[in-house]
Image (cartoon, rainbow, N blue to C red; front, top):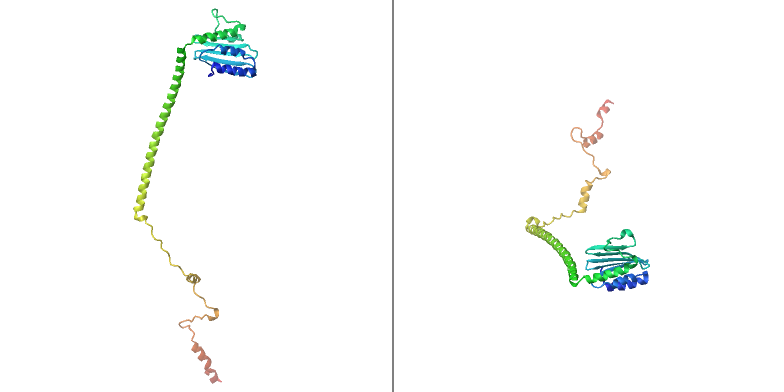
Length: 248
């Protein structure tokens, strides 16, 4: 509920063109003087609801039907609450000393109540009410800032731990790099290149000894008693057989 009485009047004028009987609510709004704040809603079928409050102490809810009759009125003060309703079970706050007005007098009763309530609030009450609201808002903002600050401190601690870890790892990495550069084992050894192998020699080694043709092969000559004497064979052929000729 943040609309001022002027805002509510303009809204009621716009709504009356579409939803019907809202002149009753306009009468209530016109009676509101001072720092009243409120809101207005309509259901699209001609009925409307007006909610207003004055410095949070006095509250008013008015429901009007589509034919311009008050169906429900709720008035709340620091000392009590009174309800006017077309339903008997919803009525409350009325006693023998404070009698409920007739239904035809409800509108006048509500207008008078709003007028009297507007005069019951002075500048001091308005400032106190505004101070309470501003103080509550300030407290919520302080809580939010404290929570954000605590969260920020935790994040800073985590950041410092991570920065220390990064520094240690970087120093260790630099130390290992300097050791590798100064170590003689790290020097690169020249690679020995084998002498090229002649393709023909490699082929000969794989092929094995050369085998001559069959016609050019030499027969092996046996040694010892069993060896054959070529001269003896030839002499035997030339000598005559003396034994056979003498016998003849």
